[in-house]
Image (cartoon, rainbow, N blue to C red):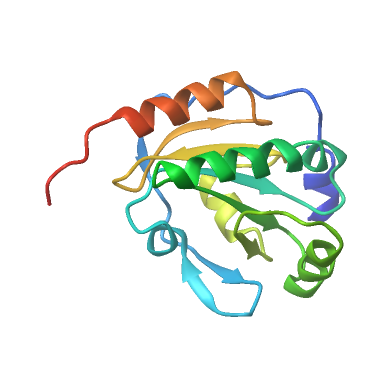
Length: 161
């Protein structure tokens, strides 16, 4: 399975905007500490940029600095940048992260359940999630289209519950 995804690692962005918003799949992910959690519960109503990545992907590593800077700015707006490492054991991801000072939360999708539910076969992949937990953008590497979708999601009024 890693080989199939490995072929998908590319520096060139795959610009595939979601045709319409859709709900996050109810798939559990794993924290670096080994706890199971759903992405919707982790986001807790916050707008998010979610990056799907892998430790072996050079195009993914090229995004680390930009995602860290975006995470710093997003927090001031009540939003979050979060990454989901796909197809690798939690311990491998945790060891990788010890060597790289990334300033945004990380989750792990060891068995591709989340990536498969989204239909994502390539990394890096970027998602934008709105406050209601809907995926409003799906694309490749973090680019201007993803940032524009993130700004749009931040500018939407908060719905009263």
